[in-house]
Image (cartoon, rainbow, N blue to C red; front, side, top):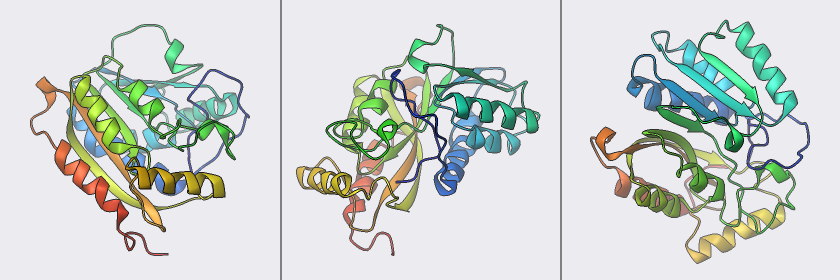
Length: 254
């Protein structure tokens, strides 16, 4: 798994490194542009968990010049935060996109219409993986399910088919959210998900019914979760069916 975002899942000290994945970054930007921004009321505030270098949001905003709201992001990694600030300035988007250095979970309380995030989703029993800040818990879904408890009308989250996607969808339903829409991208395993013990754990989770993946790759979904009053069509079962299809051994060509 290659990730473009910086450490986001805890408030503990993390390496000040910035990693990038163009494929995932472009997909995230596409999801923001097409799944989220068209549904935001004029002037509404959005909040972002883990801004990284800011590239996905910047790309989405550049393709949505009529967006009249604001996005406030939070980033723990100080190097990523500084790069994000520089990228926002270079793109002349300072009036729409603001990023704070610090923990999303310790942010001051303020009203926002939507949350957006590409949470860490590498599954493993502990954080002793090659890049600890990509750790998403035993099933890879712990940070995502924590975000689904946030009280926003809409949440756009990236969800991996090998990180307990059915559990994530059920958690969303439990907290009054439906699957309003989604986009899917097949993706090959990157360096971090191919770490031998991580890959073995993913295959174990697959046997246990918590992960859906082939030997070659998995599916990454951008999912728009919404409160019932903002959800015109419930696509929960459709998304579950597609995520299960990631078990197809020929899903991703090597």
